[in-house]
Length: 285
Length: 163
Image (cartoon, rainbow over all chains, first blue to last red; front, side, top):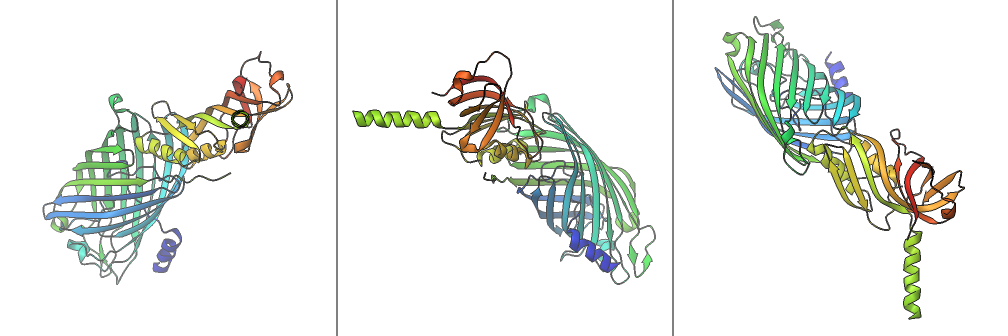
């Protein structure tokens, strides 16, 4: 199984990358980079719980190989500890390499498009150890995948997506499989549908959810170590030409989590800064 | 005086013989946000010979004005749209070129860009017989083409001898 995972990772070098860039901050979204476009993201993602606040910062890089295929890398750094459950919605300490393919792209009118994007990737344990139950595990790489579909227009945005992450086993330990999903609605009021040389704002309502499986330690699944949560909250995106700032906060709608193991997670928040470097390269004739 | 007249004649004849796009107004579908427009702006400015680019997000109109003496080809404008993941629709162009062929089957050769179009009038009634073999300026529409292609027919609204 380990070799299979490594092979998959080596071939695909990809992973489910949540929409930082210039979209919703917590949820899955469809946009990919333009051909030869570099994108750079950095931000702070936080999870606050009864056992402390866990913050992660990091740098994300994206490159558009074609208009519909983007490769990404995300290198996070974590500080603080919350003893919280595994999450793929809020980045942890793993390094991620991923590739996204926009396999459906239907442009229907001025300013409007319907599209679907699939991502595959690898997550590799970073140099930092997690906290709590997850911190006591031997760590191994994992693979991730996601599919998201939706529409974008000058006034409204709607994306629905889901992802799955599975980790390899290391010394009879294994991080939990994670299923994550999101639905996001975005709106730009008519007064803000302005020229591209002015600040562009839009607001989102982001609904995200995760189910993590049981934590395996020493070949045994820890009782009550699985979790299911549902989160809802607003986020705002501001863009000026090729610079974007986005921030959001989420509160729990539903929690089925063992407080004895993980404590009680109260809030998630994120602030992200994006810089997009477009290519002016054109073919000669 | 003779030298001045000769130079002036040479300049005028050079200008009259130029074959190039002067303006391209391209409708682009799929741009929803400022970075989309910025990406198009950067890509279009990267086409050699482009002077100014205006992008209107609400109408999807990309207006490109070109420098005299440019050799930009229509395919390059379409590629600039496609590489950003958008779709180009009809393009309104003002183009200068050599009128060839016959009255029934006229062609426009845009020598600087290596583009050649079959011409079709948008409305009947234009007599182009006196313009055959001359350098003309055409205001017309290039219909939407498939990805990676340029329409081979230019539907002209006006056609006049270049001055």
